Image (cartoon, rainbow, N blue to C red):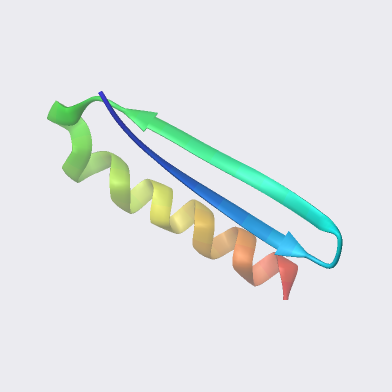
Amino acid sequence: MGAESCVMKRGRDAVYFHVYFRDALREESLPVWEEILASVCAVSE
């Protein structure tokens, strides 16, 4: 298993994002994770 985490802070609020994936599916999973983070960043701006 693999995992990544991201914390986004805005003012006094913090939001934690965690993703877990199988190592065998890493190449397929990480682009999806990056898209999710990009969409969250776009919404928070």
